Structure formats: C-alpha cells, structure tokens
Image 1 (cartoon, rainbow, N blue to C red):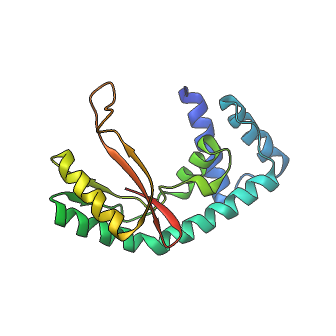
Image 2: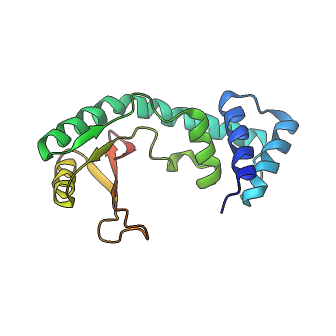
Image 3: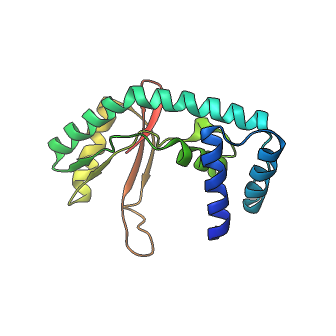
Length: 171
C-alpha cells in the first residue's frame, strides 16, 4: 500500500526522469531513495536512460495507432449503443514513467495504456457485443471481465487490451 509521501516522491522522480532532469549520481540517489520506499530497488543512470529510450519508442508507437483506436472506439460504440470516450492526448510521459518504475520494474514494454479509450454502456450485454466487434477488428491480448466478479462496492467493468499494428492499447 502506498503512502502519500512515497507516491509524491516517485511522481517527482518520474517527472524528472521523463524530462531528463535526473542524471548522474545525485539523480541515482534521489531515484533510489524514492524507489526503495516501495521496495523496488534503485535504478542507475544508465538503466534510467534505457527506460526513457524504451518509453519514447512506446510513445511513438502509441501515437501511430491512436487514431485507429479512436476511430474503432467511436464506430463500435455507435454500433452497440455505447458512448465512446478517447482522450486526445496520450498518457503523459511523466505519468507513464511513474507507472513503469512503480508497477513494471522498469520494463516499459509492459505499459499498455499510453493510448486508451473507454466505451460506456447501459447493459453488460451491450458491452459483450462491443467486445465481439473489437475481436473482429483487432487481436485481443487480454480481457479482465469484472462483470462476473464485481468489486466489493459492486463496481463492474471490463478491461480489454488490443494489439493494433504491434502496439498494445487499452479499452
């Protein structure tokens, strides 16, 4: 479980790393201190630079497929009675870096929501129809169906990862 101080420290490091402001031994000490709070260990400057380069490649790939995702979400939503919502911008580099460091052990290839969108429905049946249409258009990499197992508060949704031209996105 995160405390606010640990999250804020990692957010600062991630922003600095994404902008290239964390460098050298001082940067390593700052990054290590923030990451050790979570227990993930420290990353040296060479490793952080590699993570940045990998994340840049991921961002470039996401930018190429984002228009296809946006078009598909709106078309599928229209055909299945849903409402499509797609952010105009990709996930920010700072937030992506924070997520890669905190959740994926520095492996930028694991981040799947740089390009993302949402379709909201009034019924689970309509969501299933939309999933069928998405499967016709793209390779489905993963489905997290929380309709069958709602959260303790009753919240239900479905998370779908799609492979679009070799890049994984999230709906």
